[in-house]
Length: 216
Image 1 (cartoon, helix red, strand yellow):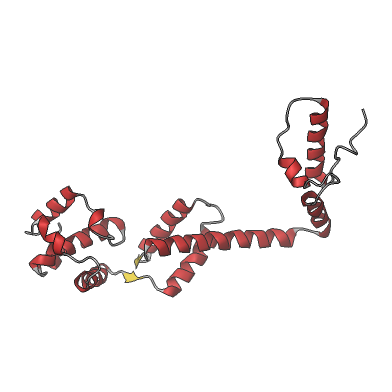
Image 2 (spheres, helix red, strand yellow):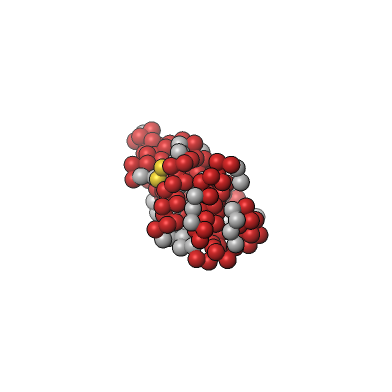
């Protein structure tokens, strides 16, 4: 433990000193506060306890959601120059993710990593994990809607008609798009003609179904 960190810890009541030290070291390592005792291995607790002249058993008395623990987190944030995440931060970060991250990255875990890095760079304490998950889902949804809107504005009337034909039904009652996605089946003249019809449908929005295929 560094000298500056030790000075912070030494001023704490003996019964809460270990909890304070663990919160401090955890935040320095992960950029967030621990959810509770379960985030620490026993070996880590023993090691830090020796550094702050405490015993590991004293951690059993530390109320992680109590007033002392909350005050400790506030002091640690102030010491490190961090602040809590506000509602305006959440809205701004969701917008940043949607534009700068989610258009290229759709994997939620990687989006969360980008968010964590951004919040660390801005000295913002991350909100709860549930709030982070909601923020990431919101950003992914925004990005998807934005992409769809941009695509829609670039589609001309002719392309719209072809898409309608592609997504509509055939004389046999099946959707053309569903037929395009269907497996080709065993190799035969019939399946070959069906696959040709699929290709035509993709290229031009038309479908040559079983009743109007090319005669052979």
